[in-house]
Image 1: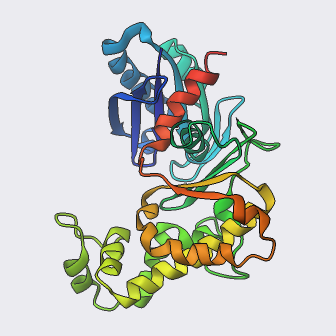
Image 2: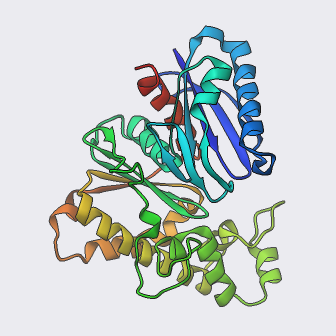
Length: 314
């Protein structure tokens, strides 16, 4: 049996087909265009699923969906998605009706956590925390080998842990959130404060053919020895360590997996992060926990497909 994994993003929606071992067999992508409305989106999503069925037919057994936002996994409802501008949208039932396939939906960070559990760790760590380090910060929890939802399905909002009293403004409207220091938008806001002559900076350190003032540019600058860029990454690592320390103390996981675009700068933020974790007075959970950085940029969609195969068929 094969599963379809779907990652609904604010700009693009990606679909993958994987087998039980997590091997990628096919993929599709289309523009999300949330302004066209959720009913139109579900129809286009069903059409993309049907495109994949032309090649795989009855082998496709289930669909798993990951969406950034507040998800009710029991009802298959996206309660709120800031990046889509949608509230209380039922995606699972309409998609099941249009495709005839069983579907399950979770927060996208939960699906990334399941992907890490299945693919990165081969189920060898049964207590797992995953942080998705992208524009914002999401997190998913696998505890005792099961996704942990909490009482309302909202568990895992680690991006909004407070790491600085009355600190920087977060996109959620609060102040001092982990995301306001370690999300890519926050990192680049700090870069605007530190780095002079941005145009020359981008010209010198930007990726060939994609010269933008972004975290890739900042990582290249750190690699080249730019003091300001290295300081920004050290600050990022410090605050990430502060947030992780609290999470590790509360959850006592076997493993923490970091994924997402910001994690590519591991060389420059990990030393400061590890320094914070190593300075904790309560040593036992920090001595045991393993920190792993995933190189799989599509961990969420892979995890969604595997989660759908395991839970959508029940």
